[in-house]
Structures are given as structure tokens and as C-alpha cells.
Length: 435
Image 1 (tube, rainbow, N blue to C red):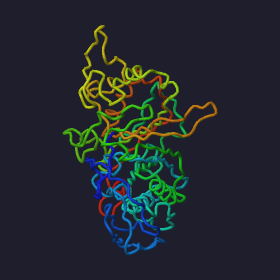
Image 2: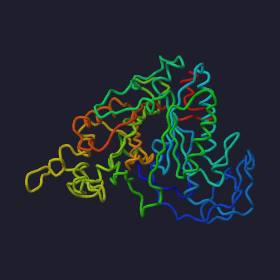
Image 3: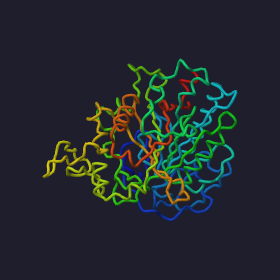
Image 4: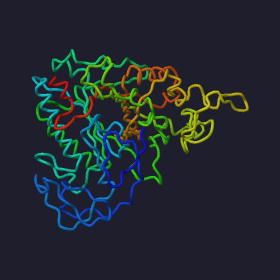
């Protein structure tokens, strides 16, 4: 998982890895300020309208207005070599949604839909209104680091007559012993990931894309997630999950020499079709956390399950969060300091033939049942160039003896091929749908 941050009045591209600390929140923008504008930093005295400033029902900004804070002005580019929302720093709010093509809809309708969706995503990600019928939900906000990411499921290719273009890497995931999967909340023809640092901005994007869908697709499932807000901590740090654990310490980093080969499909020399060049594969899992059982454990017992200190994420063998774990270190009684079934030991790449994936999840909470049990946990999203070498071997090993398995339940699953980014005036998936 990438560290959370907020950019201070600068543009973040889709491959951004740098993080900054958030500036304090300033007074909210005055009523009537258009989202279609160039975004100033806190303390500036005026705003310049974008080219379409007062169109689509958005009022023009007054001559002088309170500018957006750095949180609202954070912007990620839609077009690029890779799609946004993969290496983009973790956002505070997320929506995951899968669609199925309706009867009679095929390749032509899918191409038109991806063209509409890409156009809407491009506008919303720079703080503009949707092309038509905008709901005004986010009219007072800036882009707030909004990202929209699109992917294709295994079933998409059969329904569009593109079976010969289906990647081998998209073969269905194997069954795991820990699975308790709801088929109605798994898989799908098309997948969309939305992330933003403002909840209304994220919802606005979700609603706009749903309206764009028209009659070509129907929603198969939709899930809502969240993370800590950027700037909520004294300094940028790895996020915590709902078990209170620092989560994502050993994530691959774009600065590492082997990052590209682990995460991105290469432009040549791959078993994947050419339309997947510069893309990646997303494994999506809804993982229920059995929080009542977990919270009955002492802090020491929780740390033994994970293999890391709860306070700072450091390995039980000592040091800081990024200190290498000493797997053979024993205590005075001769017992391993990090238990053999500790989650952090089992998931280490050097314990899994080098298997690695970029974890970028959201937490979720979908209410409390009549017995007072929270329906809460992790919307696990991980990225890799090849899921059969990334996610699958690690999950198989976890299946065989992860101490954390007693406190979680895998309830939904999906695997999606996420092509490279759109270029120029193109749309995501264009090489597949028009190739």
C-alpha cells in the first residue's frame, strides 16, 4: 500500500510515487464557484475559469473568491502510459463497482460505453462538470485527487466476441479453502474503481458513470470503502486497517528496479495480447474481519498473529517499520520470535519465490446486524503483472496455515484485466475494442 498524502497545489500524474504532508484546511469556497477552473493554492486571492467555465449549469466564479485548500486542489492525470488509481497515493474514499453487459449489447456498445466513461472520467478528474445532466453534488469542490480506473472481466470477452483477445492471465482464480464467496458479488464483465480524497467527489463520479452506462450494462455489484484522510496524521505513514494494524509495509515501490516487471504488463515479450501493454491485473476480494473475535485477543496475541508490533508496524524482532524481519531469531526459551504461522512471515516475497503484488485496499463497514456484529473488513485490491505469479501463490500459502485466517472470511472475489492508459483523445480499452 502506498503512503497517504496530499499534494500541495500541484498535479500528480498517474504514476506518482511522491508524498507530501497536507496543509491545514482553509475556509470553504464561496457559494456559486464553478469546479471548472484552474485550482489555486490556499492563500491565493483569485481564480481563473477554465475554457468551459460557466457551462453545463455551473455558475461563473466571482472576481474574488476563497480558493480551494490543497486537499481539494489535488489533481491526477487521466491520460498516460498507465491508468490512474494504481500507483496514485491512497485516497480517503473509494467505490468499486462491476457491471454486466445487457442482452443484445456487444462489442459496439461496449466501445461506445468506454468512450463515454473515459470522457466523463477525464472531465471530472480535472474538476469539471459531467458533459450533461450533472447532479451538482460536487460543485463546491475541486478534483480532490479523483481517479477512475477501468478493467475487463473474464466473461466480457465471450459476450463481445473477443475470445481470441482474452489474456491467459485472466483465467479464473483457483478455489481456496478460506473462500466463502457470494457469486452475486463476485466477478463481472466490466469493473470500475473510483477513488478520491473527498466523499462527495467520489460519489459524484460514481453517479455520473452510472448515468453514462445507459441501457448497455446493468450493475452486478457495488462496494464502498474508506481510508484515513490525507493529512490526518502528523506525517505521511502507512495506513491502518480495521484491526488496528499498520497494513502495507512491504509494498513494492515504483523506485525499485524490479517494480515495473512485477506490476506492469510489458510492451513486448509477454504472453499477454498487445492491447494489455502497460496494463496490470487487479485481484479484488471482499474480506470480512471477525472483529469481535479479534478484539478478544490481547495486544501480544494480536502481534503474534501478524508478526509485527501493533504500535508502529515494526517486526517483532525489533527495529522500525521497514527493518528486515529476522526470521530465525529466537527468544530466551528458544522459540521463534516471529511465529511460523504469522501473517507477515508467510506473505514475505522471499518466502514465496519472489511473488509480489501492489496492495491498494480500502476498509469497509456495511452496518451492524441484530446481534451487534459489524459487517466490516477490507476491500482488498492488489495489482500485478501476472496474478498466477503474484496473488495465487501467496494466497495458496496463506490457505495452508496463516494465523490470521481464523479472524477473516473471504466473501467475494474478482479478477480483472486493466489495460494501459488512454492517450490523446482516445479511451481506455480502445486498442482491444477497435483493434
